[in-house]
Image (cartoon, rainbow, N blue to C red; front, side, top):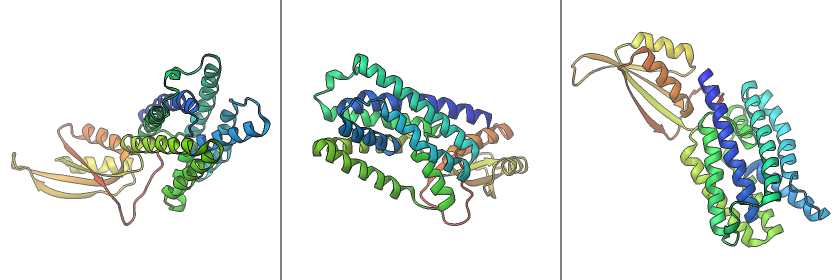
Length: 294
């Protein structure tokens, strides 16, 4: 558990830094919008800018913090305290990094200024950086705050598909961006979001299910360790090793993908010679204890 928390903290810092860099130095340069809370914050800052005609480039950071306050409370009460603390840490880091990067942008410009006229390339690069940043944080078992809190809450408390909420929010962001900056900006925002989502799906597998199969002679000890550490069921059946012609046992469990590392670590500790295989699970039907990422 300590290793997972350290890994999550490192992933959060690295992923959030990459994500914020892409938002400020690429999306702002191309006048594109991010997804989720960051995209909503961009829109709110854009609306205020249009009403008061003043430079409020730092306002996006303030909105990110404000919008995440009620989401933090949802995570604290509806998911878990560890998850909420990790989410809050990510949000604080986002606010600080966005503020710092906005200052650098205002003073020195973007390192990608040479690509300012090539908005399609900027949209692709922005999607790549955003997808990589979010993917790293989530793959390491961290929370990026914002919509990730909503995702956890809906998944564990309401059993509501998160995809519907994501689609609605992103569609609203694209629609409003088209109103303020024209159809061309909306189109490039779509490209940016598609690239981001596709890359995120490849890197981030934290909400996917996996089947882990472990072949070992240490059935009793391994079963005890798994039951002590996890709350997932285990199916055990005897087999014969085809090469050694000796009796062995297969222990199978359906787990969340981010738990695979812990299963492997325990299995290797109990039996260094065990054989482990993994396979994707498209869906499950029945009693399954789905845990928070922290």
